[in-house]
Length: 427
Image 1 (cartoon, rainbow, N blue to C red):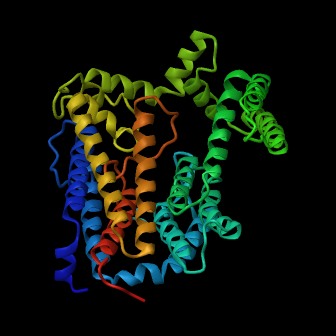
Image 2: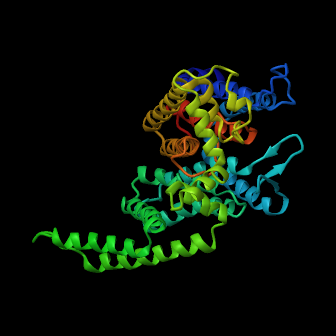
Image 3: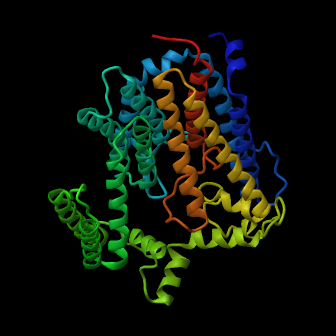
């Protein structure tokens, strides 16, 4: 497809959402890193200046993505996946440690985080595997291979340690559900989450009592035409209790103290109010200050460059994972609402684009993009406002960082290229 046709067919509404989020993000990065000294906007020694460089590189990457044939992304998806896995493995030898995680390559002028490339490559590889004519997601073997594509990068990232980035890969399971993965997998996942949380809050005994009551309710509700499968229910009960017992062991013996403190803060596990407040102001310091910054913004905010908590560096990492708190303090409830609406409209637009695809690979990749952006958006904002535990993943297109912005840009514009080519066929 010629360049003129690409620019004619590209979904400009999605491009507009992208540009608005990148632009608003940069304004808040500028505000959160501005020291009060009269530096130039184009001072590339400052973080906001460096982000301008990353924005420029992202715009160049868009031109490269749109220039390549759409068939390239499907044809070479497996190669890109293998390269990204090799880069993740290389971190164990050549990686640079930043903030306790060995997740980066030091390229001199730029710290490169290969997990961002791995997200794109994994979404492409999963879409390629699922769209192959012989793949049937209702077949157990194909299900296991699909899970393996997702699990390999996640398990390579967990030991860095970077559990936040690893969690993002699990969001790709939603692609499998869109393509017909049986819903009982979702039931198993939800049951595991519920058991994990209730075990920490109430203990294994109460989990067992609760499960026993639910099973008893099944029997009480049975009718002549409804036969209750006894063996599967007993198996679920036994496995659930075993999992509950393992939760306590993992929490007390494998989790680090800082992880236990974060869960204690999130689930209010600590009964001593004084100790809970101490945890809140130490381990939960970032979230505590972030909440205070957002609260202080009120409805209209304090104004651009007028955030006292932002200027006082009360919120650590405010230009990266906690950038949303700058929006809350300086632009208030009105500003945060606009940002949330923009992200929501972007995601809804991507759902629309994914559903109109003529090519299975394009549709599946589109849902991979949606899944990755959604979990970043949901967890980051939930973390900043204190309703989710601190995990440490950036807000797409918004947070400071070259690897993140480039990764999200590539992720999105590959899909826009595929969408622009949806009326064409390729081999």
